[in-house]
Image 1 (cartoon, one colour):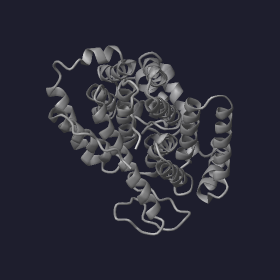
Image 2: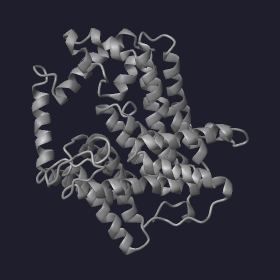
Image 3: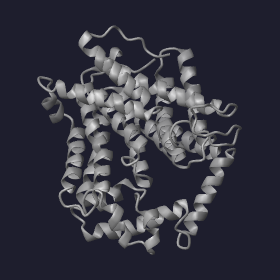
Image 4: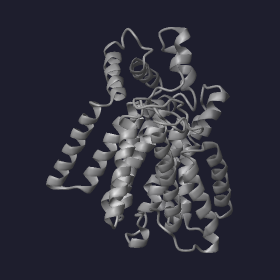
Length: 413
């Protein structure tokens, strides 16, 4: 099922262990993964000399924008109106940009270690998927949801939103493996896995975000893989399957019905899930307009937005984040922050499309699409688990994109 790797040179064994552990642990044991991350950062610091990192930086535009974004966050500390508790939290959250840089440096040109990292993530998602389905019949000790039965939300690690974000991407991985695996049994296995992963989002979770990202990720995959009549057939099939999936899913159907009602009544009820978002989308641009170029400084959103809410006691409700990564960066870092984030996403697409490796091309394109859509309705680099997912997978897939196509570079099982 998972690829057996040849023995690695001694100097790479440590990195292989660390990256395999990091990508296995961050979806299912975030605290332990932070310990592994610390070891990776220490390893990077003691191997800075003579590694050719300058050449990697010059040839990898994604690194330019990751670096620029974190520099803007650091610069914003010098003029922010925020309290230190907010500023320090932002420095910690957005350090994920820096972690992605380190991962790219360490994994580029080390294809065997990339495979350990990739397979670590696949194993973590298989554990998550199997646990989600077992939750229908058993209350698992490690599961966050403690209910059984069909028609319930069965998230396992973290919350259902972050699990579904990762599961949507894993569905794309399983779909790609189903099409590209070398024999029939593996194609069937990964096809069934992709179907179970998709159903875990549509029928075993109460979230809407995962459904939207699942459709977006599969459309991205079709656009990258198919051409001509096959592309039209693929897109039609995805739309029909997405439509059909709504009918038997009482959880999903009720959530979308509720969303439409909340959107229609958002003027009179801004405390609902959709009403809350639409109110944030209304007042945050007003805050950005005050200081449109550089913003109010790192962490300033949390206090400055309170000047725009309708009632003072609404401040704690609307000041955590605006449910939109572009607006969040705009409030703190102005149009410069928004522009750099847009350029980061565009550079992911550019890196994917220029890659000579099919697996890196399709998966990085899908990840960029999922990040783009998620950034319009959530703040993925503010959420702890989501930011780990996006930063680490960006690091892995960008480094994979640098490799030339060959059988030994394939991720296939």
